[in-house]
Image (cartoon, rainbow, N blue to C red; front, side, top):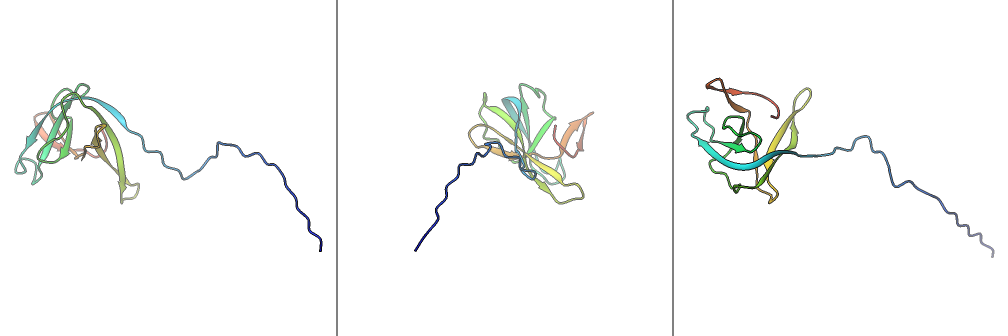
Length: 123
């Protein structure tokens, strides 16, 4: 009985490019300063919280779905893509979050020129 055993050394690069890899990043949008709640009858049946940060320091720029906001004054707040909804090109759904895992789905409502508008996309 005979056998053959062979060993070889190969080098693999630690950097491998993957084409279909998705990187989820978040954008810093300031220090949380406060929020304001809008009743559902004002915005078409939806409770909204309007968030004020050190970067977006007026109410009306950032809104999210909810009745209350559990961020604490001084929290660092981030905008993060959560997922893509169906559509020809996909429409990204965003969330606002802090470092303590509190997050809210961003709404498409904005308050501009003394009226509520709906805009698609991030800030």
